[in-house]
Length: 262
Image (cartoon, rainbow, N blue to C red; front, side, top):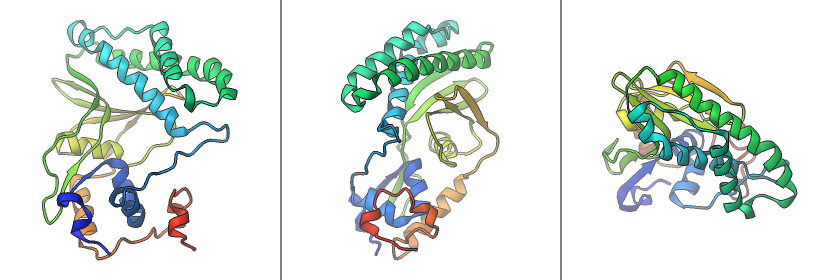
């Protein structure tokens, strides 16, 4: 059963992945967000954590943007060399040495690092093409959420999360999310609502660092009204419901706790 005291100080900070979990299976949300159970990092068939791979690439993008933002704002210089990117990728690789199986060293250094190097350099060239003739007033990696409550009631809800890259000009805002794998549908809209209060207040793109491709989201998939409505509905319910679809359970890390059978 749900209880408003499930949430410490009757406050809830929810991110896009939390919201995605909540809409799919409230019981999984309960185990993760309320109980605080640790999830397990899933490995691919080679024995490499997919979560680590994403964090690895995000870290390099963040360090590059932190290094480049002043020259982008001051002189519109987006240049970055293969050597600079490769150096950061190797530093991060050695800093996380224990998380990469030794038998994958050649795969990592001879295939993944050259691939990521090429695609990261390509990304900044694409951003330069988009913004070279525009006045960028802010470019920021891992931008934090606003602190204002999104929903007030017995439990006060704030939207949380760190946006991979935000570019703001005098005429528009652009939210970019870096991926090495799959995406969740509502993430970019969630971030736009979180930062600007409206799902239409920013251009939204996903850059797949593994494929070296950028995908623009043309239409909102989540609105401010729908987000608020779904959260209100969640707090009105008496119980944490289970996923209605089997697909919601296939990759759940809590299967041994839930033991649900279809």
